[in-house]
Length: 407
Image (cartoon, rainbow, N blue to C red; front, side, top):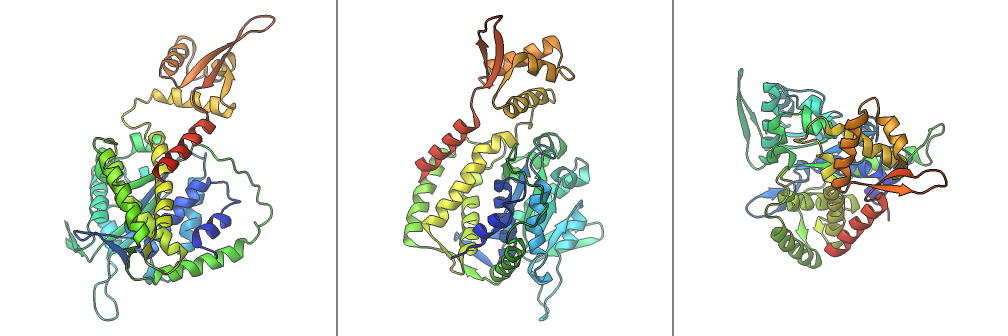
């Protein structure tokens, strides 16, 4: 039996953006399609899929963030206007609130203020000007306020939004997260609510001189599935195995969460993220609003991958711009297969980091355990090489070990 996610990943497999970007773009889009029509009652509050916000993070032009965003959002544009509310580009608090006000339905009742923010550069949406800081605060409040009306006093009067539910899909870079958005947006309030998905490279390459097999059939099927999911309504429930799994996971998470991830607040909100993503996965598979153990495990694995990569997404936060030299060096060694001759690396870095400065940075990276210096004896004279201390394969093995432990 086909499900939305497997078909979507097949639909995008010939695109050069990393699969992880396509996965999370699909999750964010389906979250908005479901918005607040379905929920999980946590008794003191409710969780809605429409609250999911995702940021795709990579260096500029490396991993095709914008393409991944456009492909997912493009499917959503085919739905009737009343089912979605896509809000794109630069904005202000006033503009955002006005676009979220969707007026009244045919019976004269206020429509819920659902909205899906789309920005291929998060730094352009959340700029450092004072009015943009207000926007960051409002986005955080709108993402949180879901079971009551939201009001804001503006210069022209008071804007009242009925039952808001705001999510989003953004692109950014580590530099953008660290230096281009307001400090208020870097706090645990907003960044902890955004699922930041980091990728530093893509192994895909396709000149696309011919249409990928099944492209248009997949697209038509996916649009029909989005429409199906837009009609789902009601509350999710756990089945017996799902409830048992989640209780054990939650108890373990609660013990481990104290003092973790103070920089962004993501870990402290991981339970909410897990349940929202699980609702999306369940809807992708069919109409039954049931959180099963397999669905919860799938959501857990998706979030674990993101969480393990998150330090790379936030590596520039609070850092000095000079750290870019270290990032450039690490990227060059990785592109060379994880090992590079010292003289080649020095020649490459010379325009940015000549002589003594290069030696100082390499010494810091060596002491930190990021790289290792290797001496290779030859018939003439020894050659020096730098090697990354942890290879990509070793890192992925650690990821798999982590998954096994939590299952």
